[in-house]
Length: 473
Picture 1 (spheres, one colour):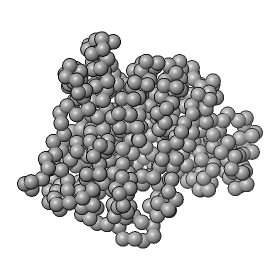
Picture 2: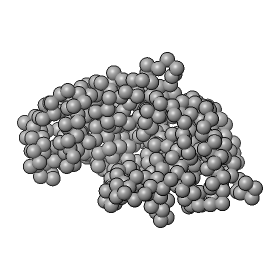
Picture 3: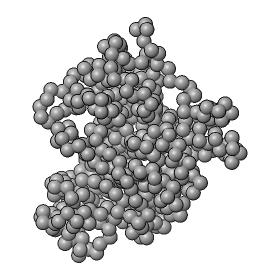
């Protein structure tokens, strides 16, 4: 492949340009570079590690499952079917080699994006690729990577170990039987830690026409009738306990906004019965949904599971893409957020409760300093979730630190989450966060606001202490 552009991620990437600060950032990063990865929120399937089957090809591994990648290629005119996603209309799905060719021929469109940094690290550091993908070398790279992926050292379990993952939290439906989590826990040859996360969105959203059927699935999974309000609460509580027995420490909620309601039981039952029967109007269904989210906060104050609140995403912005390819295919768009008034009912009840803990995430960075940092700077139960999704890019991470640290400090934040479906991107994403935080702290050292020893302690805490503490891991 002579003549191809080399692929060599720079060792000083994301460090300050000023020489003194860059040297400090290097030293700080060196001290945490090889620390274990704590991954409290991902979308990796536990079956991947349970089955431990080799990855078959680079397109299925790096392109098709990663909506950061597919959405940008789609913006440049590549259809979802051409990227390997199954089309419900029956359009033929492209074969992996064709998907890879399209990815390589569009490689230059990723310049300047956070995805490009992750992809370069995945290709170079994990898979040993030394040239940049292009239309000219797509087939040769594909064949090279297919051969490499068949090697034992690149199996899912071997990669988990080589990545230095200490704990990996998956994201799971409450009706899931968690068979793969249990199989891993019982496997004497497996020494990692994979824990489930309770994700009950479909059982709380009474505005969704599929909600009654979701409640039927919940009843079938736990053997508790969900035909009425009290039964549904008992079913949710029972499944939470099942998840806790299998290692879960967190419930995760992707509500449209952070609003919660706390209704009396009679009113909640009335709204529940109307929504279950299909006679509730839009506002009644939304009120019930906000109340059910509030019930999750109440349950967290009792069982100690951390309530992670991922709000502010306008889901499934393009109806036709949703119809043909389903959700989580790259067309969710951030919304403006509000927390001060929305979280007050929850925090009035549980903000100082000794067992209650919440990690609050947003896709609206305008609320970092105005709302979230002041809330976390007062309530002992509130941790600030790291920049997530559209904001988990280096400059957005820097803006987050600049916006929240002066009010809330470093230790009211959660530490980094990778939120990924791309298994091989986990170490790249965590390393990006470590580099960005090293650069931020190097600036504070250079400005004589903190000394380098204190900066090193803070960075160590951000990498391992904060995610363990915030998510009770």
